[in-house]
Length: 256
Image 1: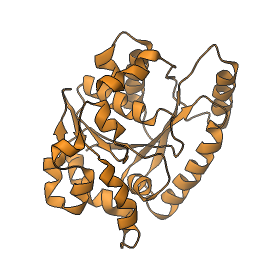
Image 2: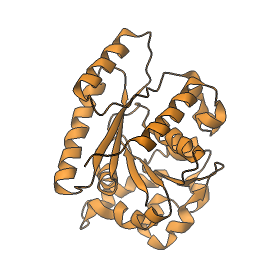
Image 3: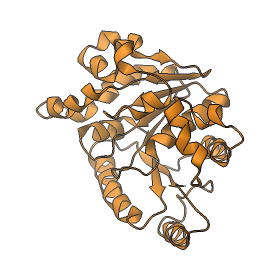
Image 4: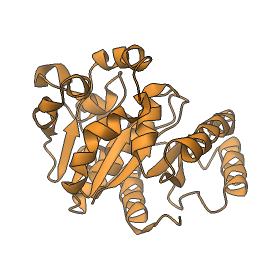
């Protein structure tokens, strides 16, 4: 039975997609069967793996419209053990289409639950918003990972996300729990980054992952080549960090 993990933060540019892609690849390297679901209309996870959802014919949006095409929508990547359910910009229309639907929060769960027996992990790369797509992801997931950029406004954003999480847990999905907060784009030379790290660890003492994702040029370059950091430069600091994070995620168990 798959562990279903949503990678979410309504603030953009915090390393959410970078974490989704490289955590998925790192788990796959550990021979865990992983399905990465690109839930973001920007389709950055799809392009970061060198894929194009439009060329595939089917994607997450078309699967939601026509359940019979789900298996056709899942793409084999160049990475062993890693599959992708791609997104296209068409996914942006889903927010409007779900507004007046009954049980609109559970469309993802209804569509994707049958896949749970086929994978060890299902990773959901959420859009940078708290709209219906993110809400659907939180109602399907059992675990939530929050990437947090080591910058001034980061902690303000996480408060709103945690309020949404508490509402979802209370009213819609009692099975979801926060797996952890992952600090990203950390520069040890930067005094502010150290302050954000210290404040985050003070506010969430049991949730912050020991692994910290550094600010790393190779990590920034990899998506433009359609590669994960493991396949772009496995000796880089970024690759080392995501491999360590994967081991930590694998070892960390939710206390319910």
